[in-house]
Image 1 (cartoon, rainbow, N blue to C red):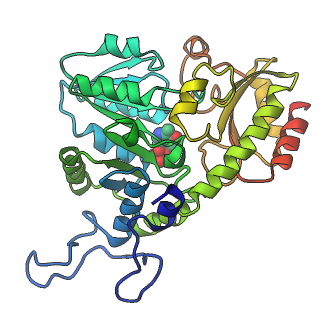
Image 2: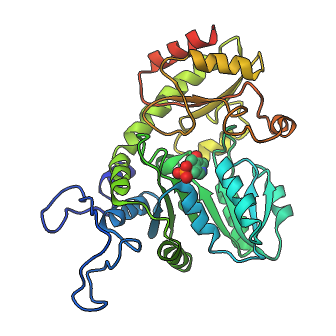
Length: 380
Ligand SMILES: *Cc1c(COP(=O)(O)O)cnc(C)c1O
């Protein structure tokens, strides 16, 4: 089955009792048993729920994974992955990663005795230099946030394999439509389904998918034991969103290219960060690794101040000033004063994260309206 067909049908079948084409929202906490431990595959809804199962089968299909487990949030999914490790284990992580992931790694798991090395993962030498006998996991996030750098999944995953470590990819920014990490050799793929998979900014959720039986056994144990599980309504919303992932993504990417072209030629714009631009440092890698270049971009202003960025963002009428991404509506944010505000200015700027940097998640509105909105906002 090709991707667009899988987005609708993977792992889905009409509901048995009624023939309902969409899975019902099984709003229940428990299931009747015929005799102790004799049941129809479900005993208690922390462990499993048929609406959740339908969603898990769909995501597994999209990522070409044998198994998938869903969580109540993206960070809930990352938390479960990290709890498969033991104190004394070592993790190599990209240093350009989602702030919530960094906080979870350094403020929860480091105090619990897991060791981390954060490296610039666009340089394989840095990964090689950080490997230790106790390295158990390599954490990849690509494209990165907010500078849209690209990490070579195939190279890093193969390096991990040679050293007996697992590789995990946070695939939230690309979505499985544009990038399938397991097919590039990664062991684990993780999603914040809050973003492109849900796609409508109306639900929080997470997922872990893998074909590694032993690892997924540990994840299922975490689902049952630590219980960060999604409710059936949230599973339903996410499943409903996924069915249009491919057409939403195509439209968003098309719009993004128009916005990038406009910004790239604007006299007040200093630099546009987008892997689709030929001058992007990993443009060729992005072309090889991804089906297309995505719907996220960032740009810096010649007047490199938080004040100017704030004025531009306040002047947009269609782009909403908000964190998050991947919904049908276009969003705009300033990492220096919002998501990355807690990072000291010198550290930020060294990483290329300047004061005026504006991050954009491009939605599926009309492309001319989006360009016109940015045009009028930049002249304010
Ligand atoms: C949003 C996000 C997360 C966290 O997901 P939540 O659903 O907000 O918990 C993790 N990684 C990336 C890349 C994200 O954008």
